[in-house]
Image (cartoon, rainbow, N blue to C red):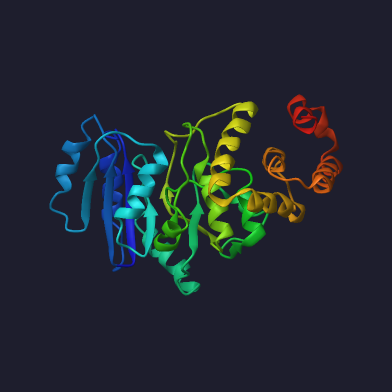
Length: 298
């Protein structure tokens, strides 16, 4: 089977029906399944699932207890049968040609075995990050991919992953708190395994808000990224973390928080000083910011 559309769900009775219908109503003749991984919902979701019991390509898995957001995504990856998994969060919907758009993009690159494919968005579009390292409809990989994910993660909803290689790479890393950006650290690890990232100039899913998005302070952002990168360090080790830090020297634009956290995993004092000076030369007025000064002189 080529594709799985996966819906990780938890207490989404108000939106889940529309999400499932959007996945069922995909146009074209592509072979795909739909799986719903319910992570211990306590609302009326189970009654809604019964309405889809007669659909042969819809399978519903219900789990006891509630796990973290990305742990449920990993459950989906393990339950899926498709070569590629496209997530649709239970408060989002896929456009009816989502599978067709993704399939055409993957076909143009001969269906890569290590690929993450995603499109434009009506909410928090990833384009501003992507255009700093590449062009739409063209693959980004290697150090460019590391620069791509220094600022933030990539929402899995509306995103397609090569299932087997992503699972072999470990899937999504654990979350320590509700704001840990596992979608950032997991993509950094996947990039180290040779994964390629393709943003197409098409809209795949509809999102008008995000129930899991949070507006956080600079300090909370720092702590959240520390959590994510510490989880990454646990699985790749300090040597590779140090290499990630040194690779920043090749970035065209640098996220200071990312640079600061990774510097703590490196013993390369010359590189630390070099990157600090490059940042100040490029952003001389930034040192007026109290938070930024604190990072520089910690």
